[in-house]
Image 1 (cartoon, rainbow, N blue to C red):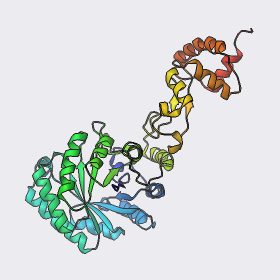
Image 2 (spheres, one colour):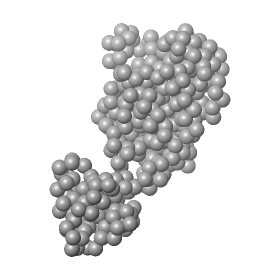
Image 3 (cartoon, one colour):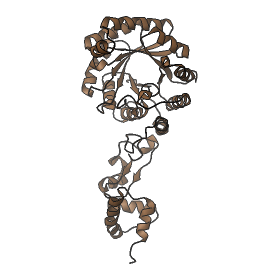
Length: 373
């Protein structure tokens, strides 16, 4: 059976989202919560950023978590030294591999990239570190050079290779094709790291897994550069229910984790956010509500309890008699079919005026204000 491991990078790539800045205590708390949920790896930060980051990474490394703790590095010996000094025993080492970034950002050539990779990985392995070699902008790289880069990483003793769709420009079919080549070519695990610029990060992550990748990179709520990354909660539920792969993460703990990250990142959770949105198990449409009341599987892909949420039959413009009668029954009021039919027209009119569903108090008041029979 295919093994799936999650490397969550909320504390590194997620925090790189514009305007997001975690305190040391917040980073430690997030790390504990990730570990408690069963995340396999935590990319804790970038020590070269300075003393505060080094302290945060060091504290996380010393927590004694079940998860492997990594620090992110450029392919520089000085970066790796700072990571090692912070107390981690695992590092991510990243270099651009596309012509665009090598020539225009670094203003170097491919030979320089391979030379830097050699120096960095050799130094990290001499220090006994677990090494994940990142291929930045792999999605736009020449496949021939990507193969050369990966082959060198394997030769140097790297433990895995990270395929990064850095600006989110691939679709699931392209991801599948490219990752399939790397999985067949290399003897070490492949990780897929996707970005959400076209809303495809989670789909692309699943495509990478279909192609044989065994590690996936995520962030809580998908926070990250620009449109963000593949969302941890989406990947966990999608792999479980669509791909029938269980990575061992406790989905019931994701809601609390997401709420905390939303609070400390200043990024509120939209009500319709997949997996953890507050209204994703709210049913108003008469046809849907009737179906769910008869069998939740009619219109729910998985039970709300799995992610710590609950089902709601909302009453509003699109409601039908069955839903209205059910909601009143929950309030210990038994409506007849005729009463439900009479009230629906008023319910719909009020809902349009309020631009929302009606709450219990409003429904009871409406019931009491009916003309006496």
